[in-house]
Every structure is written in structure tokens, then in C-alpha cells.
Image (tube, rainbow, N blue to C red):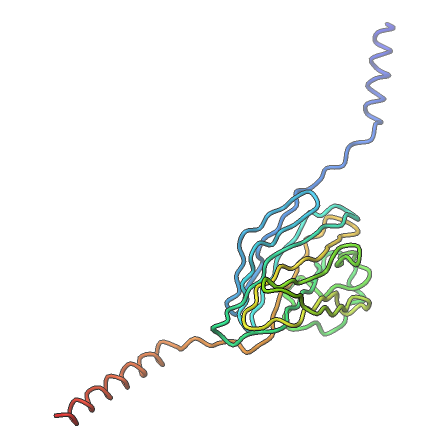
Length: 227
């Protein structure tokens, strides 16, 4: 009987003991791209995220999905960004946080939203809990050739959370470092990377056909003239 009583006490104690919080895995992936942007080589650590190598053409953008960050933890984010010096170069890289509409903190979002914000998301306001971290975590874009970009910060209003690095030239490669925090934890939010510049339009097949036909005509004319 005594043994049964001890077992019941232990069983009740186990039932009343706090249950360890389950940590969702951190995820990083490409959500969307436009204008020829691309990224590869993502990796995730306990307190660090690496977006790998991001290639951006003039006027292009890439949106990266981030989820599973622990509440109030600061995460160091790094990535390499590169352009293409053979094309019209861009000189400004902009990073912006877009948070999910499902979080219930969107009453303060400005309306209308910018056209680049995808369905189900909005620009980040001061109450949604998702933000860049600074100055405790470095915010920099350091060029491989030496020197670093100039940083402009806009995150003290409900309009957006934005970091803008200026001073790229001729397809500079840079190593970018920023910080991210999800104060509430568990959000699946987006980090949008975009660059300025005029997109380079690829010739349409019909245009290429006309160009080829025109060149062939010029060759035939020259042969007839030479004869």
C-alpha cells in the first residue's frame, strides 16, 4: 500500500512538472526571385544564418523565407552578394523585412502596401516583433576589393524595417552582415533583397529572327556588289 502511495505521488509530480518547450527547426529558403536574381548555399546554425551567395542583376530582387527563430534571440545573418560588371551595374542594395498578415499585428501597417509586397504579407511595423538587430550586431557590406558600403537605416516608424547599403560599383562583390530578431518567436517572415538599376531585357525570339535575317541579307548584298 505504501509503495502504491509513493507511485501515485511520483505520477502526480510528473504530471505537474513543466513540459519542455518544443523548438521548431530554423528554416531558410528562397521564396521568390525576379529580374534574374539567384541564391545558393544556405546554411543554418544555432545563432547564425548564412544566405550563401546572392547574385543580383540591375533592377532584380530576391525574397528569402525565414522561420523558426527562437523568441528574443539575436541571429547573425551573413551572405555574399555579387553583380555582373558586364551589364549595367547597380550601386544600391536594399534589405527589407516583410511579416505575415496572420500574426495579428497589422492594424498599424500603412495602406496601400507597396506593389512588391506578396499576398499574405505586409511591411514590418513596430509592434509585430520582427526586426533587424543593431548596433549590438554588426551591420556592414564589406567589398572584396577593400572598403565598405554606406548604410542608411529606416526602422523607427510603422512604415517598414529597412537597411540600404550604397556605394557598389562595377559589379563589386561584398560580404554582408546583419542581425535578425523575432521577439515573439515562431514567425515565418520574409527578407527581401533588391537592387536599383535598369533591368537588361533579353531580346525576344522574333527580334532575334529579324536580326539574323537582316544580317543574312547584308551578306548577300555584299556578295552581289563584289561580283
